Length: 291
Image 1 (cartoon, one colour):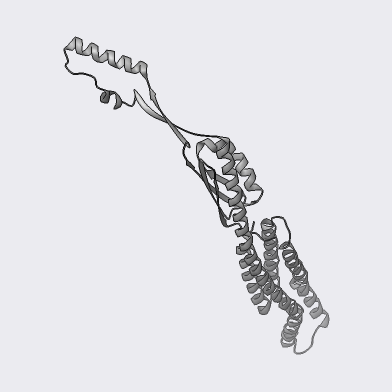
Image 2: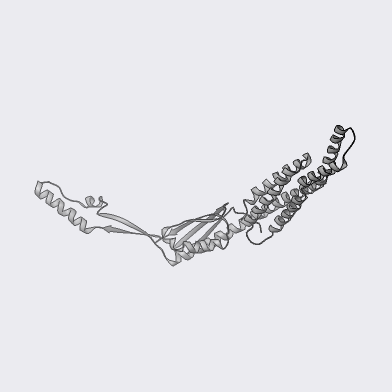
C-alpha cells in the first residue's frame, strides 16, 4: 500500500474541567523519529503516546504538540523563608541600634525581596488529563493517517504512469538490441572491403562480430530491468511499508540502465537510456515520499 510520509492531524478532548488539543505533523525521514512537545506533568505518559503513534506511523519525522487548558492545570502557592526573614529583621534592628539609623521595615520591603518570598508554580498531573491527552492523540493520528493514505493514492497514480512510460522505453530498447550487432557487422564489412580491395576474410569478420556481440549484448540487462519493473509494480500493492523496498528496486533499475549505456555502442540505444534514466530519477523522487 502506498502511504505518503507527509500529513497533518488535529485532535481535541474535553472534560468538565480540562480541554486538551493535540496536533501531529509528519514529514519525510529515512527512519522513524518522534518529537513531542507537551507540559512537563505529562512526560510520564510520553511512552504511551509514542506507542499509540507507532500503531499508525511506521516511518517519517513526527512532530507532536500537546496543549492543556482549564482550571487547576497550574497551581500556585506562596513560599516564605521565615528563618531568613527573621535573620533579615534582626540585622536591621542591630544596625539601627548600633549606628543610629532611622527608619522602619515595611511589608513592601519584604515583598520586594524575592529571596525572602516568592510564588511557586506546579503543573497538575492527574489521570483525567492523561486520558484526555491519549484520546486526543488517537483522534489526531487517525486523521493524519487518512491524509497520508489519500496522498499515497495520488503518489501511486503518478508512479504507475511513470512505470508505464518506463516499460514502453524498455520495449523500444529491446527492439534496438539485435540491430546493434547487425549494424556493426555491416560497418566492419564495408571497412574491410575498402582496405583489402573486395577480398574479404569471412572468418575474421565473424570472429570480430562475435567478440563485439558478446561485449555489446544487453539482453541480460534488459531482462533484469523488465523484471525489476514488474517487482516494483507488485510491491505497490503490498500491505506493509514499502518505501525502502521501492527505493532499493529503483537503485537496481538504475544500475542496469547504466550498464546498458556503457555496453551498447549505438546512438538510438543511448537516447533510450537517457530517457529511461530520466524516468528513474522521477521514480526516485516520488519514492522518497513513501512510508
